[in-house]
Length: 408
Image 1 (cartoon, one colour):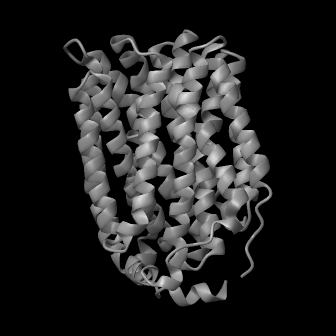
Image 2 (cartoon, rainbow, N blue to C red):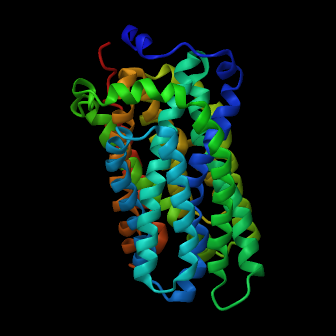
């Protein structure tokens, strides 16, 4: 869209030169907000459930309230962006997420743990939305590789997943006391501290890019996007939230039930995270070309296939292929919605657009874990729960395929 060029400042040579490294550093926000704060819980669910005698419904509720907090944070972010810069909110959210992760190690009762997961969700939304906004603005400076820069940011989730896959089992094996999982929460909080320190550089370096759009977004004429033209993509993305979170919450517990060893689970989750990182290269071209819902539909469909495989068989090569395929796809679904916003809205509305998709994403995630946990407590167990997740993803693919590009 021609009008968009007036919203983008001329990039400095330093910004162009450091673009890839800035995106990599910025990806630590995705590592904190999703890779550690959200997805490390899958590794902690089996020992916590056994130690604390949880049902699968309660275990799923821990991620449901985390998603509820994420929704509240996403709703609050546009208002906060009128008062604070994205870089400031990015770092503040990361600090808060770190604190709430650490506090989870101090409780054994369900209620305070649910509260901590809720608050961690609020903080992680601030990080994820603001990081995605800064990644989109960085990509606007280098249109030829904007898809790659977005992918690098979202791929940071994979670094958090892989780190968690290595860190959590090692801490569980070495930790003293009656609740070794508490030490794992504290170790993950320390990892968040290190990532937050890295985030200080891109938050400061990209501050100049953020200022014009933040000022513009405060004006009444550009205070929000219209949701109706994006209805198919929003609904498809909401169903993605319902489907993918069931897999990421319970797949480790399913592998344990199927008899997978601790080493096998570590390799599975670490390779899943590595596939997330590599996905930035796999789908960059698709994100640059797709101006409608094609990318969202294709990726949702592939994710449904990856999700259903462990429910059909415990054969290790198939299960490993499921993890690799899931990792190579699921964060690119998130990146596809940021790309959709970037392709179809002026820069002054990018914050509103990204927040809108984050809201429906969070709403889907609220439904997914508890429903899958409830199904898993009945006949058919976790395998039937993942079939439900796959069906949600496939319906989301069909709906998203109806999204057309907006007129310039």
